[in-house]
Length: 79
Image (cartoon, rainbow, N blue to C red; front, side, top):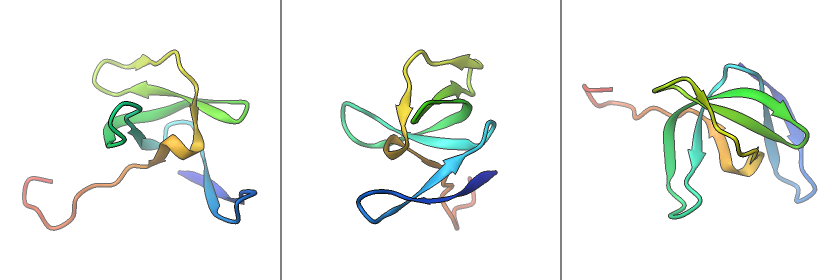
């Protein structure tokens, strides 16, 4: 569900995410990644995200660097 890659000014590539794409979100307090979210809408240079557990759209706008396409652990029987 990702739309495409865009070159950023720092020379790295970032992904443009479409609505409904499941994402991991960087925790602003400890820097770890949290899962269970999806893109609700694109807002300027960032995104509003929806928490899947209760379908709530979070009020903050998240920059691209704080989101990544959802990653699932591989090779474990409970995933």
